[in-house]
Image (cartoon, rainbow, N blue to C red; front, side, top):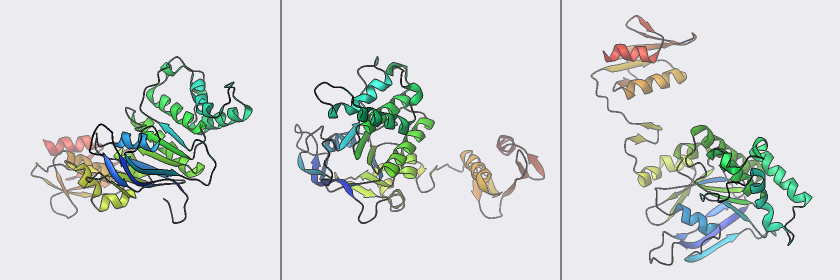
Length: 322
């Protein structure tokens, strides 16, 4: 999280974003900052214009009004690298060849990599941990591997700012977690400002230093994840149906006429409570209702109810539901 005095690498001044073919902007009057050493997640409903803002900040689309300024204390010709959702058009290219493209803006007329370029490429590969797939063709990669390669190409550009549009889309949980942890580490350890447009609410809340949340007034609401949860900003924008963001759980109707007094602690308590509520039981902290005690210290642990002992939640639920 940034503190007063942290270097601003990019800021907008009264920025308006949209298309010249329409009169109404997608965003307007944006005064935002990207700080060195921070991972910022950009979030909002589908179709609100997150990709358009990313493209505008990257210089790929002209702003309709206002200005975008990058840090002028460094003499960098290319301050921003961007990873978009566009499909790679040369699937027969090797992983290493694609990563070298990150250095092409810096090459002279003979387009020959110098030793310094090769060193930078090797460092990018090492940061992303993809040494074992360098000779593979792009069509041979999984979606997660390809996303890692695209991030390595962006790192090879040695820019202080990296913008990514939905880098975890269509990936499984392990790959989503790996990429978000990688981006967080890159921001913190390599002093980069990394902005990620994402729908990964659960991961963003756990990894982002800062969040940009699209507002209802064509604005962006900045804040740390915890403040935006507690002040209701997420609830207002996403209008969750049957999901309590403060607890991180879906809400379940207690349709069974049975009150459960659950005694226990730790993960076993949390997952037992989850199973009971998911199956329509009301769990109370008081001592009324049916008492279920979780006994820890054994493998597996034991659930005790009415002097009966159960070695699985499934067995306990079968008895309760009969």
